[in-house]
Image (cartoon, rainbow, N blue to C red; front, top):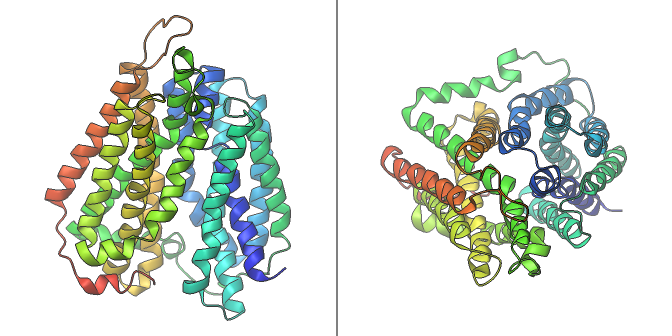
Length: 422
């Protein structure tokens, strides 16, 4: 098996694991377990908590002591154990700790998979910029395939989704030990703990422009978690209404939600054009407006006559997600000194997937419980005021967009676009 095919399989399984439960755990939580929104917000915040420290710790271990591919395999096997335990959990508190440990093992593997790919490709003299993207896109395909499999098999509200994810994690964990060796490259090199953990990038906060950018990165990171957490169970809730119960979008919500990931792969291709024509700030602003439309269309759509609005919302997701994440990483690249660029990108991810994910997940759960849960809802009725929930999220995104437009000062420099491939 050639290296490209081996790395393609690695990426496919990496995101198949995540796709098996990430968008459908809400349906399991609310539809099957019927636990509270506050507790669910805590569950979804575990990926944010894990992202704050585990990727850095795993990076130090892989740089100094253990081959990256071995650490990658060990983490996936341990993560598979935690996913296998999930169906046995019968209370939200235990579920929180099990999922937190699972995320502590899974989140570092995203960066480790990149390390394994880059290291093995470099050792064979391959052009990473040209040859890695077609390999990485199979990760998104893996995520989509997992969503379709879980949905078509009827596992969206079932604990079986975690067994599927667990088996995929075990398979990838064992497969990782067959990947090319990626030995520690920093063994014997002395670096301060600040440098090891990437904390030197925090000096970027001395710049007002960068500080404002990172704050908005955190606020946008919160938006991302909202649809990941609640989109699938939102569509499932329509099954309680007779006029919607037999519709395809209600029977297979994960398939509808997978349009978001398909859109994501397509919008990536448009980014160079938009960056060159409109500049980084305007592209990021487009992303924020797209989040307003994403949530707003959910607020007014339904699985029946309004299905086109749900689908359009999923298509818009591609712009909402890609335009900020990719243009944001480019902005960080162009504004950081070469000596701290890797740490600066780590800080960007920490603000979006760490602090942003944690705050978005935990606060949204509390707000839904307090303001949008219908007390003593009768059997067969929807328990949540979904229109109010999505309008609130849309209003939040609109405020973020308006503040960003006025507070973030950055002039378009066409030279920045030349670095988009680097």
